[in-house]
Image (cartoon, rainbow, N blue to C red; front, top):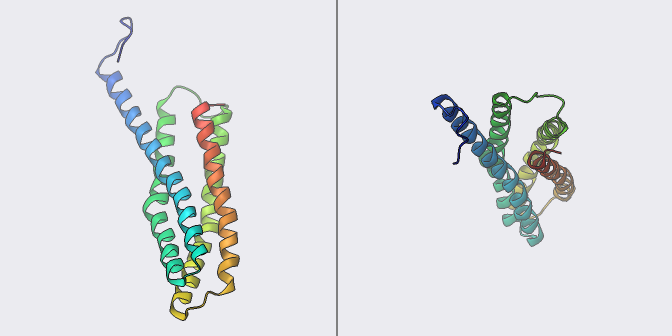
Length: 171
């Protein structure tokens, strides 16, 4: 890394930059976990549903819940914690920056969609799919819930993609 000889690059500055860079890495890692799982999960679920095989559908539905607990939730926590930690370490204000304000708003809207719609729908989908695996017949409720999950899941995937664009371009 080239430095300007006129700048004081003492240990405090180097440590501060290392902390910020570590936070930034963890923030991006959280985005990869969150968005990567959201996109891949949708592909798994759609492909499993198309098979019409209740055992495959039930297995995939349980995986949706499991991967959300292992990847989506930790990703969202990393995004929030590291995002605010980075913001507090920078000299710019936390208000008056549209990209930051809209980004936060869309992030928290996404979280609300998960909490209010997607998680309850996913839990019900798991229960209906498991019942179908035991009975051999998929209840029509599954298709209705899947459509709701797809619609809200699509929104909850597009919103963070907009946030990603805002954070990278700072427009």
